[in-house]
Image 1 (cartoon, helix red, strand yellow):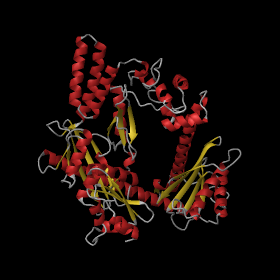
Image 2 (cartoon, helix red, strand yellow):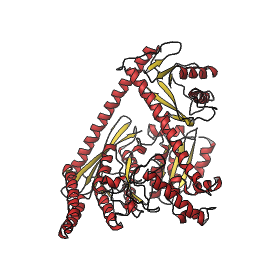
Image 3 (spheres, helix red, strand yellow):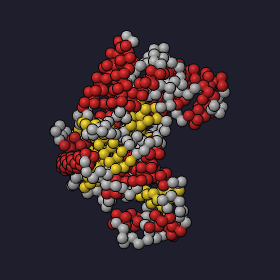
Length: 629
């Protein structure tokens, strides 16, 4: 044990909190929580012979640790889940690809709330909104969104920019439009942007949407049926007909759901199946006694983790961020921190949440069914992964044979440039390991050192010089060199790559892939190599080339949109560089400036009231011109 550890162990606090174990490179390798930090952290460095081999391996790598003191153990639970999602430590049980799971968001602080799809990741979420999810089946989630817009007609969250106009363009902080947006014309919005619906009527739409997302279909159908009867009794037959159609759509959804509880309960059934170093957690979502969804989550790093640790890690990562858990969670066995989880969830959602482990009866049958589905999903996922690995291996072996490599390349890197008339030039590096995408190794480059007219060759040379030079400088980010270097382009791009390697005294196999005829360009060979269209080696090269192009284009689009957005302020008289910087610093983005009121603008240092009112009016006019165009 080093001196740093010994000193820190002697200074540990006795309050509850979170600890972060770090290796020699300061990378976080484990995050944990404790009711008493001193006792918990010291226990790792006392008698390790009785600890699990996985814990022993973790402790052997610990060179330092940090602690964060909080007020209560409940706060430590929430912070632990947040830090695990942020750092993804190698020795924690991790919810795989958690950042990719989308949620449906309903804003609640607007006069006319909006619907949006967001991906939670590790960032802080708006506490003034309601979130539903996460949805592991993205297609099913979009079906829900489309249904909500068609049946309940709640407006979309604004996503306007000078280059992209989608969703309702109006915000209650800005001016109303003279005519409604396209969503109104196609029957997916009631037109709050043009004042075509009252707040009270729109609030009823939002209430219905929330009831639907909460799974309270019976309550929603009863309310709609009563409203339809009132409309018919008042001879408002068109309104009654619309309600009739809405009820029919919802009843069809209700009929498609499987009844699993005669008591019409709301509950989540959590079960899992583990194999090797991964596990599948499956959640059967039951609302109003009907099975309305089943969600599968893959967990990594489960070797050596017991049932209690698996369930606790999943429940913390799944339920402590967003979403609204039901009153009852069914678990295959009790967890040691069950009371803490119950108290935390109860406090967060404002109603009692219980964890229950049934031993017999219908609820136990539900658990068994969910566990069986978890096993089947894990088996199918592993079979699919094995098949992808086999095909990738065959493609690599074929590629090695056709381009003359002594063995199949393990690491492939592909490079691409994206620019528009030389502006916002960027480069991408995409990595495939063992023939499959390794997205954690992807890198992007902002090209900035070339001069003169747009020159793809000069930009590619800068990209490769920076990437390969970083490897020679022993940069940890770029330490690994490829077994095969691929450039998107023909002979010219390949020659640039070869010269870049020569200047750095590096030698490695390199090829180009020319898009026109999908030719493989080889060094020292005059004619390109054309593979059959069914060739797996060709499909692999096309896949990595297309991925490099997508990754570069995404970064280019991001930079271009940012530049175009910020240039809007340059159109406003009286807004110079200093005031532009002050506005961006205060609001964070041009999009927020555009939706700010004149009072909000006047609150920015250096923006007098007359200029704030002028700025507000001009930005509202720009937004209206964009919508009209």
